Image (tube, rainbow, N blue to C red; front, side, top):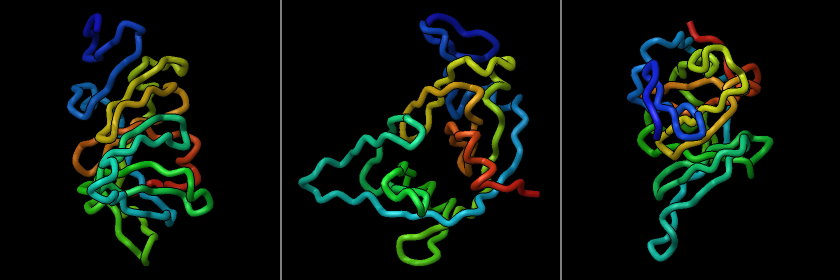
Length: 167
C-alpha cells in the first residue's frame, strides 16, 4: 500500500479500499432502502469431511467466500446465481417466509460509490465485506451498509428492481 489520502486507503494500482470501519462512512449520504422481493435461500452446511469454505462467483463478477453455516441467497428466477450471507447477518436481516424462501426485513443504507471517488464513475473501488473483497467500478455500484455496520458493493442496476426507499 502506498498512501492514505482523505481517509481513503489507496493501493499501488490506485484502487480505493473501503472497510466497515473506514472513517469515510461517516461523511457519505446514505439513504435507507427496503427490499421488495422474495428470494431463494439455502444454508451452506457441508459435511465434516467436506471443504468448510466455498468460493462463489457472484452474478456481478466478484468472488466471495461462504463458510460453513452461511446462507446462499439468489433471485427466484436465477437460482444458480447466488451470493453468500454471513449466518449472524442473515438471522438479523432476513425472515423465512416458507421453506427455502426469504425476504429481507432489515433496512439497507445505500450511497453512490461515486461519493468516495469525487464523482469519477470509472474509478475502481475495493469494498471489503464480511465475505471477502470485491473490486468494482464506482459508477456501477453503490456502497451498502447493513445492520451491524457491515459494508458491501451493491449493483446500481438492481436497486430499481429489488429495492424501494424506506421512510
